[in-house]
Image (cartoon, rainbow, N blue to C red; front, top):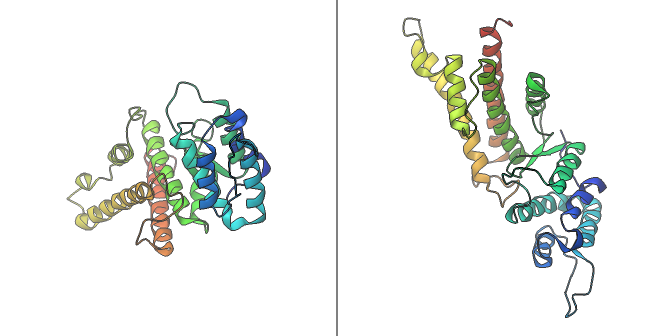
Length: 273
């Protein structure tokens, strides 16, 4: 799992393409990005707007970030913020733009991915259309052993749990509705797997303890979703206030156990174990 931000030449070119011919966010917005990343290029537009164009400025910033790795992640995060604010990525549309497709491909080659809402994801997206169960197992294995950016992994773990929920429902031939949110998908998957507290057989010994275990598993999934939302689109990898790196990694590991439990139950119910 990559720990460093993707700032290679292919990714740099993909970002710069959004600014070709003067397109994309303004020079002023780029200056803010570079200052926040610690890469101020001292750009001062004159009356005739002389100086490097926006595309060149982006390429130069990435070149500098490769020399100064500590600035790399902030540069990528803030550029993604600007692309989202300008509706260039992370918005629903009938056909994806060539620039967004190119950026996704470049990030994927670097070991990262871009989520539907334009957020950076570690170790690539879970491609259910081509990877199926294998993709879930591979992502689960990566997250179990991850030692990288915990805030980034929180978002990736949330995506994993949601993908597991969808996979469970599809295996039972009852896919969720198109606009179903995280809570609805996980709730329906738990119901199909018969692990909601209300579904525990009260005639078995220790049923109350089993109920509490199943409820705690749901609370872990909920916590991951809440932490992901608290990061905010403008804060990139910043952890919510009060959440330590150690706590974030604990929650991630627990969420991976929940994902593994759901997949194991699915295998058992379908006679695969």
